[in-house]
Length: 278
Image 1: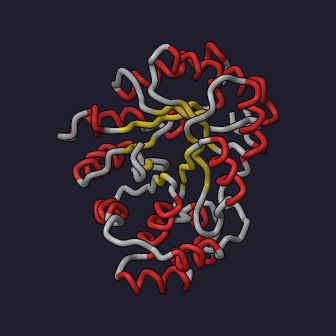
Image 2: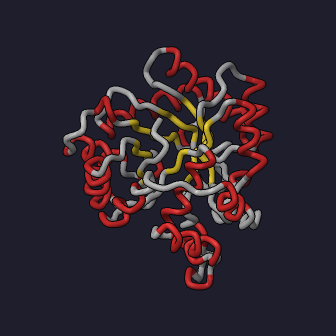
């Protein structure tokens, strides 16, 4: 799986096709979508309009909680493939853990294991799982998730969870890797805590003649994370991928680590289930 990819959360259908094609033209080889984003069809169209061969692109999609359950998950996977126009995806994720309906989550993971056994997906993983729920899932099933895609950025580093990932051999993949969730989930974005404006990050950016966003993405790479920044703007898509020509020192990585507030920007995954989100 590539270390850096394009996320399309909140990308409108019209914007998604162009964003995917632009990203692939600029060298991206990972695209992350989800059934709940309602743009799988446009991701597939962007792939087809690109000159990049499908075999070179790592495609991830996710199963939403309304389709949890063994048979339901298998049917939902087929629908995602139809929308994408693909024969398989490279990584299939359970979008939420649903701790209050965890038996459905376990049954869904067993369906994902079946897809993997049948060779219909290259890898399976989860999203938004805590360390405790990962341990429960691993203890009750056969396949350790390849990936846990979670909120990680300099203001919410989730160090203990990342350490558990390392122990279990799970890749940490960061959604909202430059802290966008701190802005778009806040009622007052201008007053929100925004790592893009943090003096420590801005100072490092000035040193390397990079943007704050590029410094944060480089911080993820230094930690061995995979990151999937979202953008529909060509300039920003290009900028986000221009992070392979510099490195951060150990001291700079530590300085960014120290910005952690312990405060989640997005919704609490422990409270998401079919009773609250449907």
